[in-house]
Picture 1 (cartoon, one colour):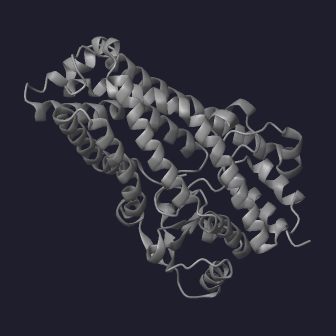
Picture 2 (picture 1 turned 180 degrees about the vertical axis):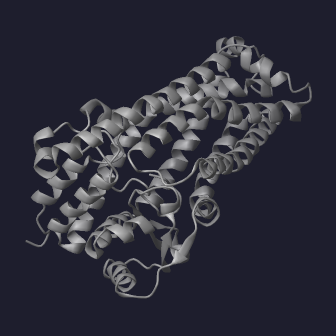
Picture 3 (picture 1 turned 90 degrees about the vertical axis):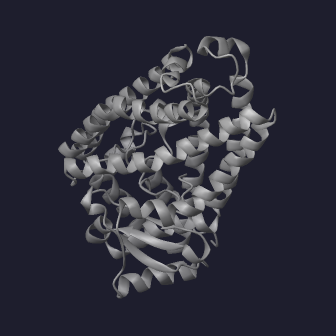
Length: 399
């Protein structure tokens, strides 16, 4: 889950690029051999770039975090405390970005070959810069706060845990209002049957929405999606212009009904709360690990309060995130399955749900049934074939 307001499933409603369950026979009943082959070819083309990016980034963090290299790099910015914190933040953000940039570009090239990219290289580069302008202040702010606390109190880890939890909540509320507009333009949907139908769908589901917006996703991609964004008075339905131009109105309603399911089940508020608790617990665990003398010796620092330990902190956090990832994705798959059931119950249109899954999978060049191991490790959504099976076996709750 993204946590950016109530926009659960954004960019992932199809699960089309997720790993799957290997039910090739079921996929053959719903997709042509050419469509299946095309989805598998895209996965085989993109996966090496993604794996390479992760491997290079992880090697960098471990190589500099578990040796004195990170301490020397940070110390090169000067002896002053503030300069060392600044150096730690700059190197932690910029070095991984530079090293993984070729892999990101390679992934873009592969997606472009499959017709999924409409954005030019200049626009892509500008997005990379925008991402840095968002991440750099956040990382620097966190590091300055963390090392300031570590330098003045032995209870720094408790205050940092509280700060991490508050930050998760703050970003969840602010992201739809502050960060989303940096990457897409949103315009109100023109009055008409489709807007009226989507508002009526939300009302029938008991969800109050402020507006229906159209995101100019076609500037970057041909992929199809919609999501619900924001909390309370800021909540709005957002549909990609690509979806509106391609899918039937009922299929659009089914995508939105899935997203409304996340709202009804309060998936994002609950996910934000779990994320906040997890962030706090993670900080406490990190504090215990990075205060361990043998690790500090490896990193070439005498105590964690020295900002030169920042690369050790990042390395340990990276390992922890990698180990916890599959468990979070397993939970996500259950939540997405529940949202699918909600969409079916709300619309009572299993045939249209199946047609929608086919359209989204084919348009997004998804692999209906990727290898099971990849599914368990990487997937945040059920596979398209699994979702189609859900629709075929679904029965109304009141029957």
